[in-house]
Amino acid sequence: MRFSGNKTIFLCSAAVLLVASGAQAADLPAKAKPVEYVKICTMYGDGFYYIPGSDTCIKFGGYVRADYGFNTSGGRNPAYGGTQGAQDRTVAQYSTRHRGNLAVDTRTQTEYGALRTMTSIHVQNQDQTESSNVSRAFIQWAGFTIGHAKSYSDTWSLESDWHYATQQNQSDTGANGTNQFAYTYELGKGVALSFGADERRSKSVTNLSRPDALRVGAEPNNSFAGQRWPDPHADLHINQEWGFWALSLLAHDVSATSYTTTGAVGACPSGAPTGVALSTCGHPADRVGWAIMEGGELKLPMLGPGDRIGYFAHYGQGTSAYSAGSVLTSAGLFGSGNRAAVGWVTDGTYVNGSRIELTTSWTAAAGYEHFWTPTLSTSVFGGYTSIRYDGAAKSLFAQSVCPRAAAGGQTGFNLASGPCDPDWQYLQVGTRMQWLPSPGWRFGVEGVYTRVYSAFDGARANLAGTNTSGTTGVVTAINPVIGARPSGVYSIGDQGTWAIVFRAQRNFNTASLQ
Image (cartoon, rainbow, N blue to C red; front, side):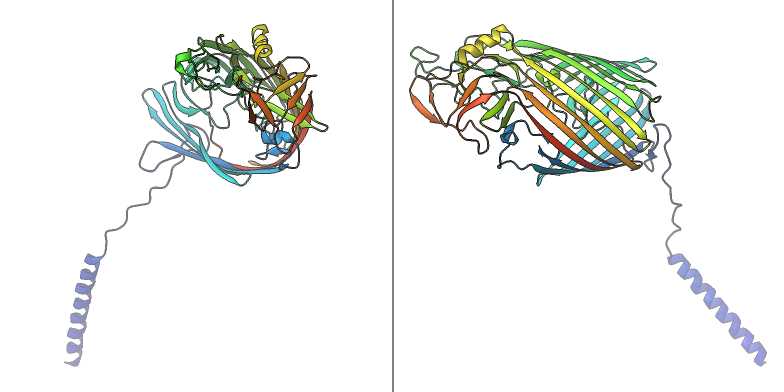
Protein backbone atom coordinates (compact mmCIF):
# COMPACT_ATOMS: atom_id res chain seq x y z
CA MET A 1 0.00 0.00 0.00
CA ARG A 2 2.80 2.39 0.92
CA PHE A 3 4.75 1.33 -2.15
CA SER A 4 1.72 1.89 -4.39
CA GLY A 5 1.17 5.40 -2.95
CA ASN A 6 4.79 6.35 -3.45
CA LYS A 7 4.65 5.13 -7.02
CA THR A 8 1.57 7.24 -7.68
CA ILE A 9 3.23 10.35 -6.23
CA PHE A 10 6.36 9.75 -8.37
CA LEU A 11 4.36 9.36 -11.60
CA CYS A 12 2.37 12.52 -10.89
CA SER A 13 5.53 14.53 -10.21
CA ALA A 14 7.13 13.31 -13.45
CA ALA A 15 4.04 14.34 -15.42
CA VAL A 16 4.13 17.84 -13.90
CA LEU A 17 7.82 18.23 -14.79
CA LEU A 18 7.23 17.16 -18.40
CA VAL A 19 4.36 19.62 -18.79
CA ALA A 20 6.45 22.46 -17.29
CA SER A 21 9.42 21.64 -19.49
CA GLY A 22 7.21 21.70 -22.57
CA ALA A 23 5.81 25.08 -21.60
CA GLN A 24 9.32 26.53 -21.08
CA ALA A 25 10.52 25.11 -24.43
CA ALA A 26 7.61 26.79 -26.18
CA ASP A 27 8.75 30.16 -24.71
CA LEU A 28 12.34 29.83 -25.99
CA PRO A 29 13.32 31.67 -29.29
CA ALA A 30 13.72 29.71 -32.51
CA LYS A 31 17.12 28.22 -33.17
CA ALA A 32 19.54 30.72 -34.82
CA LYS A 33 20.44 30.22 -38.49
CA PRO A 34 23.93 28.96 -39.24
CA VAL A 35 26.56 31.73 -39.51
CA GLU A 36 27.37 32.63 -43.14
CA TYR A 37 31.14 32.98 -43.16
CA VAL A 38 32.87 35.44 -45.51
CA LYS A 39 34.11 33.64 -48.60
CA ILE A 40 37.32 34.39 -50.47
CA CYS A 41 36.83 35.84 -53.97
CA THR A 42 39.51 34.57 -56.33
CA MET A 43 38.36 36.20 -59.59
CA TYR A 44 40.20 39.51 -59.10
CA GLY A 45 43.39 38.57 -57.31
CA ASP A 46 44.49 38.35 -53.68
CA GLY A 47 42.72 40.17 -50.88
CA PHE A 48 39.14 40.11 -52.22
CA TYR A 49 36.15 38.70 -50.29
CA TYR A 50 32.49 38.31 -51.15
CA ILE A 51 30.21 40.73 -49.34
CA PRO A 52 27.85 38.39 -47.44
CA GLY A 53 24.54 37.96 -49.21
CA SER A 54 25.78 39.38 -52.53
CA ASP A 55 27.88 38.53 -55.57
CA THR A 56 30.07 41.64 -55.08
CA CYS A 57 33.72 41.22 -54.11
CA ILE A 58 35.45 43.81 -51.91
CA LYS A 59 39.04 44.57 -50.96
CA PHE A 60 40.33 46.94 -48.30
CA GLY A 61 43.83 48.38 -48.48
CA GLY A 62 45.87 51.41 -47.58
CA TYR A 63 48.94 52.62 -45.79
CA VAL A 64 50.29 54.73 -42.94
CA ARG A 65 53.20 57.02 -43.81
CA ALA A 66 55.51 59.34 -41.86
CA ASP A 67 57.78 61.84 -43.64
CA TYR A 68 60.46 63.95 -41.95
CA GLY A 69 62.38 66.51 -44.00
CA PHE A 70 65.24 68.98 -43.59
CA ASN A 71 65.17 72.06 -45.84
CA THR A 72 61.74 71.03 -47.12
CA SER A 73 58.11 71.95 -46.61
CA GLY A 74 55.54 69.29 -45.85
CA GLY A 75 58.31 66.83 -45.06
CA ARG A 76 59.25 66.31 -48.72
CA ASN A 77 58.96 69.44 -50.94
CA PRO A 78 62.36 70.98 -51.87
CA ALA A 79 62.78 74.62 -50.82
CA TYR A 80 63.34 76.63 -54.01
CA GLY A 81 60.42 79.09 -54.10
CA GLY A 82 57.64 80.67 -52.09
CA THR A 83 58.37 81.45 -48.45
CA GLN A 84 60.84 78.53 -48.27
CA GLY A 85 63.01 80.12 -50.96
CA ALA A 86 64.04 82.95 -48.63
CA GLN A 87 66.61 80.62 -47.03
CA ASP A 88 66.83 82.85 -43.96
CA ARG A 89 65.91 82.51 -40.30
CA THR A 90 62.20 82.99 -41.01
CA VAL A 91 62.13 79.59 -42.73
CA ALA A 92 61.29 76.41 -40.79
CA GLN A 93 63.91 74.04 -42.13
CA TYR A 94 62.51 70.99 -40.31
CA SER A 95 59.08 69.86 -41.51
CA THR A 96 56.87 66.78 -41.27
CA ARG A 97 53.90 65.05 -42.84
CA HIS A 98 51.96 62.09 -41.44
CA ARG A 99 49.33 60.45 -43.64
CA GLY A 100 46.77 57.69 -43.30
CA ASN A 101 45.21 56.20 -46.44
CA LEU A 102 42.23 53.86 -46.81
CA ALA A 103 41.25 52.37 -50.17
CA VAL A 104 38.11 50.32 -50.92
CA ASP A 105 37.88 48.38 -54.19
CA THR A 106 34.67 46.57 -55.23
CA ARG A 107 34.01 44.32 -58.27
CA THR A 108 30.78 42.78 -59.60
CA GLN A 109 30.44 40.71 -62.76
CA THR A 110 27.94 41.92 -65.38
CA GLU A 111 27.18 40.81 -68.93
CA TYR A 112 29.52 43.59 -70.14
CA GLY A 113 32.36 42.60 -67.84
CA ALA A 114 33.33 43.65 -64.33
CA LEU A 115 31.69 46.69 -62.74
CA ARG A 116 34.32 48.27 -60.51
CA THR A 117 34.33 51.12 -58.00
CA MET A 118 37.36 52.54 -56.22
CA THR A 119 37.46 54.96 -53.30
CA SER A 120 40.71 56.12 -51.69
CA ILE A 121 40.93 58.76 -48.97
CA HIS A 122 43.97 60.58 -47.55
CA VAL A 123 43.86 62.01 -44.02
CA GLN A 124 47.02 63.80 -42.96
CA ASN A 125 48.77 66.29 -40.71
CA GLN A 126 51.33 68.39 -42.55
CA ASP A 127 53.41 70.89 -40.60
CA GLN A 128 50.76 70.81 -37.82
CA THR A 129 47.90 71.47 -40.24
CA GLU A 130 45.13 68.88 -40.63
CA SER A 131 43.70 68.10 -44.07
CA SER A 132 42.00 65.37 -46.04
CA ASN A 133 41.23 64.68 -49.66
CA VAL A 134 39.75 62.03 -51.92
CA SER A 135 42.52 60.67 -54.14
CA ARG A 136 40.25 58.18 -55.93
CA ALA A 137 36.49 58.09 -56.51
CA PHE A 138 35.73 56.40 -59.82
CA ILE A 139 33.63 53.80 -61.59
CA GLN A 140 34.95 51.47 -64.31
CA TRP A 141 32.64 49.45 -66.56
CA ALA A 142 32.76 48.12 -70.13
CA GLY A 143 35.98 50.00 -70.85
CA PHE A 144 34.84 53.34 -69.37
CA THR A 145 36.50 55.15 -66.46
CA ILE A 146 34.32 57.86 -64.92
CA GLY A 147 35.35 59.94 -61.92
CA HIS A 148 38.47 60.95 -60.02
CA ALA A 149 41.36 58.66 -60.98
CA LYS A 150 44.93 58.53 -62.20
CA SER A 151 45.07 60.05 -65.67
CA TYR A 152 45.67 57.77 -68.64
CA SER A 153 47.89 60.54 -70.03
CA ASP A 154 50.50 59.79 -67.32
CA THR A 155 53.54 57.97 -68.67
CA TRP A 156 56.30 57.09 -66.18
CA SER A 157 56.63 58.65 -62.74
CA LEU A 158 59.42 59.32 -60.25
CA GLU A 159 57.01 59.39 -57.32
CA SER A 160 57.17 57.35 -54.09
CA ASP A 161 58.07 54.06 -55.79
CA TRP A 162 61.40 55.64 -56.68
CA HIS A 163 62.01 58.30 -54.07
CA TYR A 164 60.36 60.24 -51.24
CA ALA A 165 60.75 63.97 -51.98
CA THR A 166 58.12 65.26 -54.37
CA GLN A 167 59.58 65.36 -57.86
CA GLN A 168 58.62 68.87 -58.85
CA ASN A 169 59.27 68.60 -62.59
CA GLN A 170 56.97 65.82 -63.72
CA SER A 171 53.37 65.44 -64.83
CA ASP A 172 51.82 62.84 -62.59
CA THR A 173 48.42 62.25 -60.98
CA GLY A 174 49.29 59.02 -59.19
CA ALA A 175 49.15 60.49 -55.69
CA ASN A 176 45.93 62.49 -55.81
CA GLY A 177 44.19 61.69 -59.12
CA THR A 178 42.25 64.03 -61.42
CA ASN A 179 38.63 64.41 -62.57
CA GLN A 180 38.16 62.68 -65.91
CA PHE A 181 36.11 60.67 -68.38
CA ALA A 182 37.96 58.03 -70.44
CA TYR A 183 37.47 54.95 -72.57
CA THR A 184 40.05 52.18 -72.93
CA TYR A 185 40.11 49.67 -75.76
CA GLU A 186 42.11 46.51 -75.04
CA LEU A 187 43.98 45.51 -78.19
CA GLY A 188 45.31 42.30 -76.65
CA LYS A 189 48.71 41.02 -75.48
CA GLY A 190 49.05 43.84 -72.95
CA VAL A 191 48.42 46.65 -75.46
CA ALA A 192 45.67 49.21 -74.77
CA LEU A 193 44.50 52.41 -76.44
CA SER A 194 42.74 55.08 -74.36
CA PHE A 195 40.85 58.27 -75.18
CA GLY A 196 39.96 60.67 -72.41
CA ALA A 197 39.31 64.21 -71.25
CA ASP A 198 40.71 65.50 -67.94
CA GLU A 199 39.89 68.57 -65.92
CA ARG A 200 42.52 71.02 -67.09
CA ARG A 201 45.92 71.25 -65.44
CA SER A 202 47.23 74.74 -66.12
CA LYS A 203 49.83 77.31 -65.22
CA SER A 204 49.45 81.07 -65.40
CA VAL A 205 48.47 82.98 -68.51
CA THR A 206 50.12 86.29 -67.64
CA ASN A 207 49.28 89.80 -68.82
CA LEU A 208 52.67 91.51 -68.61
CA SER A 209 50.95 94.92 -68.88
CA ARG A 210 49.82 94.55 -65.29
CA PRO A 211 52.15 96.34 -62.87
CA ASP A 212 51.94 93.33 -60.51
CA ALA A 213 52.56 90.69 -63.21
CA LEU A 214 55.81 89.34 -61.70
CA ARG A 215 56.85 89.12 -58.08
CA VAL A 216 59.84 87.24 -56.69
CA GLY A 217 58.83 84.22 -54.63
CA ALA A 218 55.28 84.12 -56.00
CA GLU A 219 53.40 82.82 -59.02
CA PRO A 220 52.92 85.35 -61.83
CA ASN A 221 49.60 87.13 -61.95
CA ASN A 222 47.14 84.72 -63.56
CA SER A 223 44.72 86.06 -66.15
CA PHE A 224 43.51 82.61 -67.27
CA ALA A 225 39.89 82.60 -68.48
CA GLY A 226 37.41 80.18 -66.99
CA GLN A 227 37.61 76.58 -68.18
CA ARG A 228 35.82 76.18 -71.50
CA TRP A 229 36.61 72.56 -72.26
CA PRO A 230 38.60 69.80 -70.56
CA ASP A 231 42.00 68.64 -71.81
CA PRO A 232 41.49 65.81 -74.36
CA HIS A 233 44.16 63.15 -74.83
CA ALA A 234 44.88 59.91 -76.68
CA ASP A 235 47.15 57.34 -75.06
CA LEU A 236 48.91 54.09 -75.93
CA HIS A 237 49.98 51.74 -73.11
CA ILE A 238 52.02 48.54 -73.47
CA ASN A 239 52.41 46.27 -70.41
CA GLN A 240 54.60 43.19 -70.75
CA GLU A 241 56.74 40.92 -68.56
CA TRP A 242 59.76 43.08 -69.40
CA GLY A 243 58.10 46.28 -68.14
CA PHE A 244 55.89 48.91 -69.76
CA TRP A 245 55.88 51.86 -72.16
CA ALA A 246 53.38 54.68 -72.67
CA LEU A 247 52.75 57.49 -75.16
CA SER A 248 50.26 60.33 -74.83
CA LEU A 249 49.14 63.20 -77.09
CA LEU A 250 47.24 66.05 -75.42
CA ALA A 251 45.55 69.37 -76.24
CA HIS A 252 44.99 72.24 -73.81
CA ASP A 253 42.85 75.40 -73.83
CA VAL A 254 44.98 78.55 -73.35
CA SER A 255 42.68 81.53 -73.04
CA ALA A 256 42.71 84.80 -71.11
CA THR A 257 40.34 87.24 -69.49
CA SER A 258 40.02 90.82 -70.72
CA TYR A 259 42.77 93.31 -71.44
CA THR A 260 43.39 95.80 -68.63
CA THR A 261 42.94 99.55 -68.47
CA THR A 262 45.98 101.84 -68.62
CA GLY A 263 44.68 104.97 -66.91
CA ALA A 264 45.69 107.10 -69.90
CA VAL A 265 43.36 109.61 -71.55
CA GLY A 266 41.29 107.84 -74.20
CA ALA A 267 42.17 104.43 -72.79
CA CYS A 268 39.60 101.65 -72.37
CA PRO A 269 37.52 103.00 -70.80
CA SER A 270 38.59 106.59 -70.22
CA GLY A 271 39.16 107.45 -66.59
CA ALA A 272 39.06 103.85 -65.28
CA PRO A 273 41.57 102.84 -62.58
CA THR A 274 44.88 101.53 -63.91
CA GLY A 275 45.35 97.79 -64.30
CA VAL A 276 41.70 96.71 -64.05
CA ALA A 277 40.50 93.99 -66.44
CA LEU A 278 37.18 94.98 -68.02
CA SER A 279 35.10 93.11 -70.61
CA THR A 280 34.72 96.32 -72.64
CA CYS A 281 38.49 96.28 -73.29
CA GLY A 282 38.36 93.12 -75.41
CA HIS A 283 40.60 90.08 -74.97
CA PRO A 284 43.25 88.12 -76.87
CA ALA A 285 42.13 85.29 -79.13
CA ASP A 286 42.10 81.83 -77.57
CA ARG A 287 45.03 79.55 -78.32
CA VAL A 288 45.36 75.75 -78.19
CA GLY A 289 48.41 74.30 -76.50
CA TRP A 290 49.66 70.78 -77.10
CA ALA A 291 51.98 68.22 -75.54
CA ILE A 292 53.55 64.90 -76.48
CA MET A 293 54.62 62.70 -73.57
CA GLU A 294 56.27 59.28 -73.53
CA GLY A 295 58.09 57.10 -71.03
CA GLY A 296 58.53 53.59 -69.72
CA GLU A 297 60.24 51.15 -67.39
CA LEU A 298 62.47 48.14 -68.03
CA LYS A 299 62.96 45.30 -65.53
CA LEU A 300 66.58 44.17 -65.04
CA PRO A 301 66.48 40.94 -62.99
CA MET A 302 69.89 39.93 -64.35
CA LEU A 303 71.44 42.78 -62.30
CA GLY A 304 69.59 42.16 -59.05
CA PRO A 305 66.27 40.94 -57.54
CA GLY A 306 63.91 43.76 -58.50
CA ASP A 307 66.38 45.95 -60.43
CA ARG A 308 64.78 48.34 -62.91
CA ILE A 309 65.37 51.47 -64.94
CA GLY A 310 62.82 54.04 -66.12
CA TYR A 311 62.54 57.34 -67.95
CA PHE A 312 60.19 59.89 -69.47
CA ALA A 313 60.47 62.72 -72.02
CA HIS A 314 57.74 65.38 -72.29
CA TYR A 315 57.54 68.34 -74.68
CA GLY A 316 54.83 70.94 -75.19
CA GLN A 317 53.76 74.48 -76.01
CA GLY A 318 51.24 76.20 -73.76
CA THR A 319 51.11 73.07 -71.57
CA SER A 320 53.64 73.73 -68.81
CA ALA A 321 51.62 71.78 -66.22
CA TYR A 322 52.25 68.69 -68.37
CA SER A 323 55.61 69.25 -70.07
CA ALA A 324 57.30 71.14 -67.20
CA GLY A 325 55.59 69.66 -64.15
CA SER A 326 52.17 69.64 -62.53
CA VAL A 327 53.61 70.77 -59.15
CA LEU A 328 56.57 72.83 -60.41
CA THR A 329 56.29 76.33 -58.96
CA SER A 330 57.90 79.60 -59.96
CA ALA A 331 61.39 79.90 -58.53
CA GLY A 332 62.63 82.43 -56.02
CA LEU A 333 65.72 80.95 -54.36
CA PHE A 334 67.90 83.37 -52.38
CA GLY A 335 71.58 82.98 -51.56
CA SER A 336 74.08 84.89 -49.46
CA GLY A 337 75.25 88.37 -50.36
CA ASN A 338 72.05 89.64 -51.99
CA ARG A 339 71.94 86.95 -54.65
CA ALA A 340 68.82 85.28 -56.01
CA ALA A 341 67.67 82.86 -58.70
CA VAL A 342 64.29 83.54 -60.31
CA GLY A 343 62.02 82.00 -62.92
CA TRP A 344 58.30 82.01 -63.63
CA VAL A 345 56.12 79.14 -64.90
CA THR A 346 53.48 80.15 -67.46
CA ASP A 347 51.35 78.62 -70.17
CA GLY A 348 51.49 81.87 -72.09
CA THR A 349 52.15 85.62 -71.91
CA TYR A 350 50.63 88.68 -73.56
CA VAL A 351 50.27 92.46 -73.22
CA ASN A 352 47.29 94.72 -73.82
CA GLY A 353 46.39 94.53 -77.49
CA SER A 354 48.60 91.52 -78.32
CA ARG A 355 47.89 87.85 -78.84
CA ILE A 356 48.91 85.13 -76.33
CA GLU A 357 52.42 83.81 -76.93
CA LEU A 358 52.63 80.15 -75.89
CA THR A 359 55.44 79.11 -73.54
CA THR A 360 57.59 76.17 -74.66
CA SER A 361 58.73 73.68 -72.05
CA TRP A 362 60.25 70.21 -71.96
CA THR A 363 61.40 67.75 -69.30
CA ALA A 364 63.59 64.64 -69.36
CA ALA A 365 63.88 62.39 -66.31
CA ALA A 366 65.29 58.95 -65.46
CA GLY A 367 65.90 56.65 -62.52
CA TYR A 368 67.65 53.38 -61.69
CA GLU A 369 67.03 51.16 -58.66
CA HIS A 370 69.41 48.38 -57.61
CA PHE A 371 68.64 45.72 -54.98
CA TRP A 372 71.75 44.70 -53.02
CA THR A 373 69.59 42.06 -51.31
CA PRO A 374 65.85 41.30 -51.63
CA THR A 375 65.23 43.76 -48.76
CA LEU A 376 67.85 46.50 -49.34
CA SER A 377 67.90 48.81 -52.36
CA THR A 378 69.47 52.02 -53.64
CA SER A 379 67.96 54.30 -56.28
CA VAL A 380 69.41 57.24 -58.18
CA PHE A 381 67.14 59.64 -60.05
CA GLY A 382 66.90 63.03 -61.66
CA GLY A 383 64.84 65.34 -63.85
CA TYR A 384 65.75 68.42 -65.90
CA THR A 385 63.23 70.99 -67.15
CA SER A 386 63.66 73.87 -69.59
CA ILE A 387 61.13 76.71 -69.85
CA ARG A 388 61.62 78.91 -72.91
CA TYR A 389 59.95 81.95 -74.45
CA ASP A 390 60.12 82.57 -78.20
CA GLY A 391 61.23 85.81 -79.83
CA ALA A 392 57.74 87.33 -79.80
CA ALA A 393 57.30 86.60 -76.09
CA LYS A 394 60.73 88.00 -75.27
CA SER A 395 59.82 91.22 -77.04
CA LEU A 396 56.82 91.49 -74.69
CA PHE A 397 59.15 91.12 -71.69
CA ALA A 398 61.47 93.76 -73.15
CA GLN A 399 58.50 96.08 -73.66
CA SER A 400 56.77 95.62 -70.31
CA VAL A 401 59.12 94.09 -67.74
CA CYS A 402 62.77 94.82 -68.36
CA PRO A 403 63.17 98.65 -68.63
CA ARG A 404 61.90 99.02 -65.11
CA ALA A 405 63.82 101.89 -63.57
CA ALA A 406 61.31 104.38 -64.98
CA ALA A 407 57.86 105.19 -63.63
CA GLY A 408 55.16 102.70 -64.56
CA GLY A 409 57.32 99.66 -63.87
CA GLN A 410 56.54 96.35 -62.27
CA THR A 411 55.86 96.53 -58.56
CA GLY A 412 57.57 93.23 -57.79
CA PHE A 413 60.53 92.84 -60.12
CA ASN A 414 62.53 95.81 -61.43
CA LEU A 415 65.59 95.13 -63.57
CA ALA A 416 68.24 97.73 -62.85
CA SER A 417 70.63 96.40 -65.53
CA GLY A 418 71.63 93.30 -67.44
CA PRO A 419 70.14 90.89 -69.98
CA CYS A 420 66.39 90.63 -70.49
CA ASP A 421 66.08 86.85 -70.89
CA PRO A 422 63.13 85.13 -69.11
CA ASP A 423 64.28 81.57 -70.06
CA TRP A 424 65.19 79.37 -67.10
CA GLN A 425 65.80 75.72 -66.15
CA TYR A 426 65.17 73.50 -63.14
CA LEU A 427 67.19 70.44 -62.03
CA GLN A 428 66.28 67.94 -59.28
CA VAL A 429 68.52 64.91 -58.64
CA GLY A 430 69.12 62.61 -55.71
CA THR A 431 69.66 59.16 -54.26
CA ARG A 432 67.71 56.97 -51.83
CA MET A 433 68.56 54.01 -49.60
CA GLN A 434 65.58 51.85 -48.60
CA TRP A 435 65.20 48.85 -46.27
CA LEU A 436 62.17 46.52 -46.34
CA PRO A 437 62.48 44.33 -43.21
CA SER A 438 59.15 42.62 -43.95
CA PRO A 439 56.52 42.76 -46.73
CA GLY A 440 54.77 46.13 -46.79
CA TRP A 441 57.06 47.66 -44.13
CA ARG A 442 59.80 50.06 -45.21
CA PHE A 443 62.32 52.59 -43.92
CA GLY A 444 64.40 54.89 -46.05
CA VAL A 445 66.43 58.07 -46.29
CA GLU A 446 67.40 60.15 -49.30
CA GLY A 447 69.32 63.25 -50.27
CA VAL A 448 67.98 65.60 -52.96
CA TYR A 449 69.78 68.44 -54.73
CA THR A 450 67.77 71.18 -56.44
CA ARG A 451 69.24 73.83 -58.74
CA VAL A 452 67.58 76.80 -60.40
CA TYR A 453 69.31 78.01 -63.56
CA SER A 454 67.98 81.52 -63.29
CA ALA A 455 66.04 83.66 -65.73
CA PHE A 456 67.68 87.06 -66.38
CA ASP A 457 70.99 85.43 -65.44
CA GLY A 458 73.67 88.10 -64.96
CA ALA A 459 71.19 90.94 -64.44
CA ARG A 460 70.79 93.12 -61.37
CA ALA A 461 67.29 93.60 -60.02
CA ASN A 462 66.08 96.35 -57.74
CA LEU A 463 63.82 94.69 -55.17
CA ALA A 464 62.78 97.88 -53.40
CA GLY A 465 60.20 98.53 -50.74
CA THR A 466 58.41 101.17 -52.84
CA ASN A 467 57.77 101.66 -56.52
CA THR A 468 56.32 104.38 -58.70
CA SER A 469 53.16 102.93 -60.25
CA GLY A 470 51.56 103.88 -63.57
CA THR A 471 51.65 107.37 -65.04
CA THR A 472 50.00 108.92 -62.02
CA GLY A 473 53.23 109.17 -60.06
CA VAL A 474 51.72 107.37 -57.08
CA VAL A 475 54.30 105.61 -54.91
CA THR A 476 52.97 102.22 -53.89
CA ALA A 477 54.25 100.32 -50.85
CA ILE A 478 55.15 96.76 -51.79
CA ASN A 479 56.98 93.77 -50.37
CA PRO A 480 58.65 91.99 -53.28
CA VAL A 481 61.31 90.36 -51.09
CA ILE A 482 60.30 87.22 -49.23
CA GLY A 483 61.09 86.32 -45.64
CA ALA A 484 63.37 88.78 -43.85
CA ARG A 485 65.47 89.52 -46.93
CA PRO A 486 66.22 93.26 -47.15
CA SER A 487 65.09 95.49 -49.98
CA GLY A 488 67.78 96.56 -52.40
CA VAL A 489 69.65 95.56 -55.53
CA TYR A 490 70.17 91.81 -56.00
CA SER A 491 72.47 89.96 -58.36
CA ILE A 492 70.41 87.49 -60.39
CA GLY A 493 72.11 84.14 -61.04
CA ASP A 494 71.96 80.37 -60.53
CA GLN A 495 71.37 78.97 -57.03
CA GLY A 496 71.21 75.45 -55.57
CA THR A 497 70.05 73.83 -52.34
CA TRP A 498 70.10 70.39 -50.63
CA ALA A 499 67.31 68.55 -48.80
CA ILE A 500 67.14 65.34 -46.77
CA VAL A 501 63.98 63.24 -46.38
CA PHE A 502 63.33 60.25 -44.08
CA ARG A 503 60.27 58.00 -44.47
CA ALA A 504 58.64 55.14 -42.58
CA GLN A 505 55.65 53.44 -44.20
CA ARG A 506 53.42 50.43 -43.58
CA ASN A 507 51.25 49.15 -46.45
CA PHE A 508 48.40 46.72 -45.82
CA ASN A 509 46.58 44.72 -48.47
CA THR A 510 47.39 47.47 -50.94
CA ALA A 511 44.68 47.95 -53.56
CA SER A 512 45.45 48.97 -57.12
CA LEU A 513 44.68 52.68 -57.44
CA GLN A 514 44.60 52.92 -61.25
